[in-house]
Structure formats: structure tokens, C-alpha cells
Amino acid sequence: MECQITQYTVGYQRKTSVHYTDKLDLYHRGMIRCALCSRVYTPYMKKGIQYFNSRCPDDCTNPKRNFNINFIENKIGDILSNLYFTDKELVEIDARTTTDIAIFEEKRTVNLEVNEGQKKKIREKLKFLHTNKLDLLIAGTYSAESYLEEENRLHGELTGLQGEEQTSDQAMHEVIKDIIKLSELLKDSAAYWSFANSHEKEQIMRVIFSELSLSENTLQFKVKKGFVSFQTRLLVEGDSTGSRTPIPALRRPCPNH
Ligand SMILES: [Zn+2]
Image 1 (tube, rainbow, N blue to C red):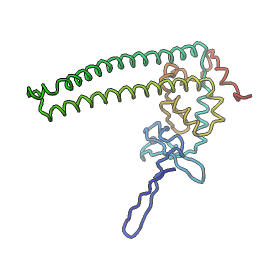
Image 2 (cartoon, rainbow, N blue to C red):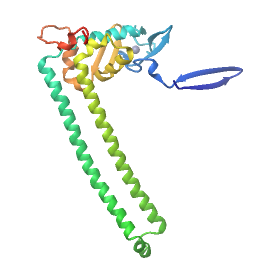
Image 3 (cartoon, rainbow, N blue to C red):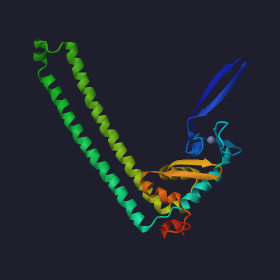
Image 4 (tube, helix red, strand yellow):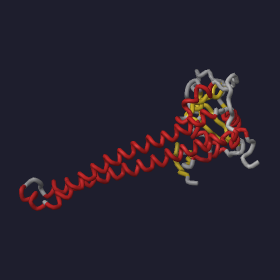
């Protein structure tokens, strides 16, 4: 683990503070906020147990200023065990993710084509500069200096465009990874939750939830894009009037049994 040690001297007293750059040793950092004032709950360790402490201002009326990691993970487990999807909804989720990938791919192809056109123009300009260097200098179109500047500028533009393509490749990869994760999670999340360690729980939370906020003992949540159309229904979960089919895998106590 890397750590930076900052030393500073106050009067005659020397203090040393240690900032760990690897923050993975504390879980769910920055993920849970006070539902009333939106300040984040900060994780800290005490006697080997992770707790969260609120940074609420004095006038915030949320009485929940402190809780341990089990408290919040149990709350999230409750939410996950209530994630019911009808067969129709499962088909919709599937269609939605397929559409997301298709739209993303289409945009990316268009961008790449535009990029390709721009790169071609730049290469032609460079070729023109190189082929006619002597004539351009004699005619005074460029000085030796401005010729070099123009050449560098064009090379810079070319590198920039190539960088954009790489970023787009990575974004594509991320989108697909998230979607695959999402559909895998939908199958097993609730069953998996109780067996997962806090690191794995954090990964599940980051994929499913865009926001988690706590007021007293009530955990509110917002879900990420793939779940958005189901959010309204998920929030009224507990109202058991609808006929809902649980995902069979979610009801399995353990995937191996
Ligand atoms: Zn607050």
C-alpha cells in the first residue's frame, strides 16, 4: 500500500499525518448521503469495525449521525431482496441493453468516419507542404519558421484525432462491461449479496444505484440507467397488490446449492 507522509512543524510540536492513497481499505466511500442535507457520510475505522459519520451541519434534523457498515449493508440487502421483475420486464431490460449498445456503436461509427475524413485532409495538407516545400519558401508563402509551425500544428491535430479514437474505444468497452455486469447482477444479486464481502458489495452497489441517502432509519435510493423505467415501481415496493414474478435466481438461497 502506498502512503504519503506529510510532516509539518507547529511551534515546538512535530506532527505527522498519514494519508493513504489506496482508499480501498474503507468501503462505500462517498456513496451514502444524508437525505435531508445531502452531506456525505464519511467512513472511518474504530476497533477493527468500519463506521460512518455524518458531516451534517448543526441545524440538520437527521438524528442518524453514526452507524456501522453492517447496518447499511443490511438495508441495501433488503432493497435488493425486493427487486422483483416480471418476465415482461426482464425482456424489456434485455431489449434496452441491446438498444443501448446498438445506439452507442452507431454513434461511434459516425464519429470514426468523421475523424477519418479529417485525418485524410490533414495528411493531404502535410503531403502538399512536403512536396512543395522549396516552392513555398521561395514564393514567400512561408518563412522557414512559419513552415515548421504549420507542420507541427498539423501533426498536433493528427495526434489529437488519434487520441479521440482511443478514448472512444475505451468508452465502448466500459459501456459493454457495465451492461454485462448489470444483466449478471439482475440474475443473482440478492442471493449473492449475503455471501459477498464488502468489496464485492461495493461493486454491486456502484452498478445498480446512482444515489443512496439515509434519514433516520430509512434508506432511499435512485437506480442507474438500466433500471430507471422500473424505479417508480421499485420505490413503491411493499405494496403487494400487483402480480409479480420474482426472478427465479433471486429466490435461490445459494447458486451452488
Ligand atoms: Zn444532514
